[in-house]
Image 1 (cartoon, rainbow, N blue to C red):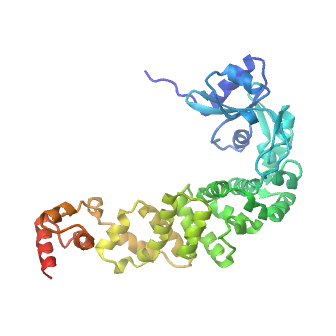
Image 2: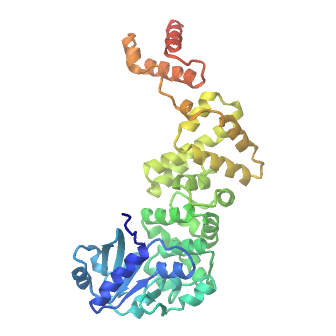
Image 3: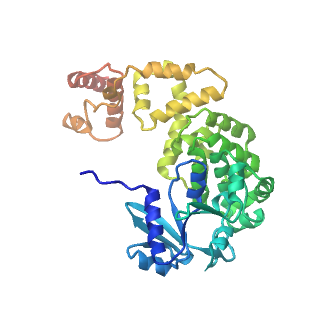
Amino acid sequence: MTLYAHTAKESAIAVIDKLRQQGAIALLAGGCVRDELLGLTPKDYDVATDALPAQVRKCFPRAREVGAQFGVILVRKYSYDIEVATFRSDGEYLDGRRPENVEFATAKEDAQRRDFTINGLFFDTEKNEVIDYVGGQKDLRNKLLRTIGEPVQRFSEDHLRLLRAVRFAARLGFEIHPDTLSQIKQLAPKLRIISAERIAMELEAILVAPSRSSGWQWLMDTGLRGHLANSWTDDVPADKAALSRLSFLPDQVISTSLSFAAIFCDISSSSIKRICHDLRLSNRVASNISWLIDSLPEAAKSGQLELADLKLLMAHKCWPELLLLVNANERAGGHSTSVYDKLIENTRDIKTSAVAPPPLLTGDDLKTLGINSGPEMGKLLSALYREQLNETIETRAQALVWLDVALKD
């Protein structure tokens, strides 16, 4: 028997219905309302209610407190986590990140404390109607991103909203209201107060999306680009080249490593390491970025590479992304795709099983032949494996003959 699989929206509505049964007001809130009105698929569904956190917990005993001080409870329903937040108004922001305290309030007051008008909408699932206290529907129709209330206040409360404005404008293809845009430009240096991890998360969200080139353009136009990391100063030619590369990447979500590699191509290796460190990117991502950029010139001369070198490139987990970067880099430079086409041609007939085959001889094999562990053994194994990748040696017997000759030289 096949069980019916509930959707995230149905899960949220089930939470709303149960809260209403207890006499509470409960509405869909924020981004899910915006996306549904735009005909997009929401990433998740959030619920706002006048029920206090203790009442929500009583209604859902297994719920988890993820922001109790802000009235946020996480309810698990039909395999989905639904965030339930009590209507609130925020106290004073002292650190440019979060309020010192909150007071539980009405839906209208809750809408007024949110960032942008298009994110301040509620939806009553019972009456099937939008509740709009902030003019968000009009701005959706006009494709306009505007802060709720005075821009300087909204951005001073949480400086990360400066980057969120860029992300929303790029993703939705909206213009930024002149007053909002003016304050973003003026307050851009405030980004330096924000933790590197939060900046990196927003930057990643901007760059991995299909709208990445629009997002990068907004970062340059607003002046935010120069305040993303202390070690990452403005470089107009490099930034324009990065914009062009981004525009030639696939029209789909891409990896963090590829997106950052595309904007770092004209930066020195030492600078890239400092920027990755300052942005607190993971060692894995930083390593992948470095490999992509370091491999770019090698891939560009694929016609001159030995078979072993091509296979070593193909064996890396980022090989598919390297192909995309080569293509974008060539097109961004105004060149034909001949380098990319040549790379594809030279690697097309290489079988997957031949890219990174098990070595014909291992360190243990060499030890049994009386060769001690150390730099010399490493050199022998490396040289032998290259011969294997070049397909000049194909059997264990051939490998032993090669080794015997190498030891006599």
